[in-house]
Image (cartoon, rainbow, N blue to C red; front, side, top):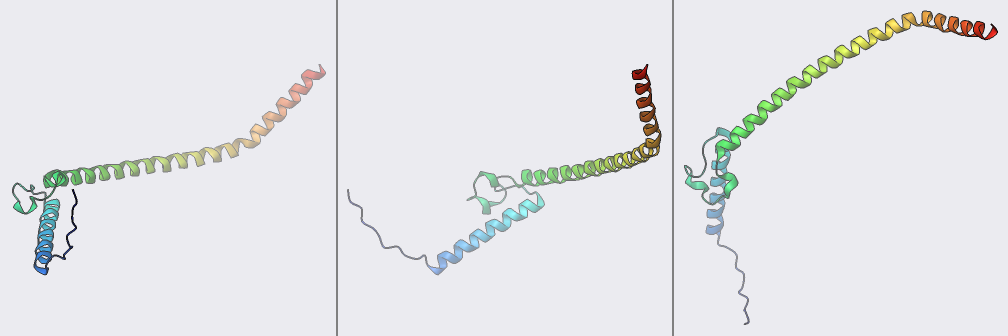
Length: 123
């Protein structure tokens, strides 16, 4: 069986204009639903040509609200962790200052320990 090729023709201007208007109309309806949380194509006949991911705007809107709430909670947790880190840093600096103040005494103890060890060796 041999098939013959048909000459490709450009769609007419009326077809292109109608298709563009249809695409923009459907996209506007979809985006409006995304922003307002309205239900999908069952109540909006302009979306009958879209695939299943566009079936329900309410779910997508609720997902965005859930993500927004999760982001807010995460931000609060990070602020709490930042406060904890600042407190830990402050306490570590205070401990370091106390250690530095005690260092001369620790040096004296080390010197005494060395002398005691030398005396024990001599005895």
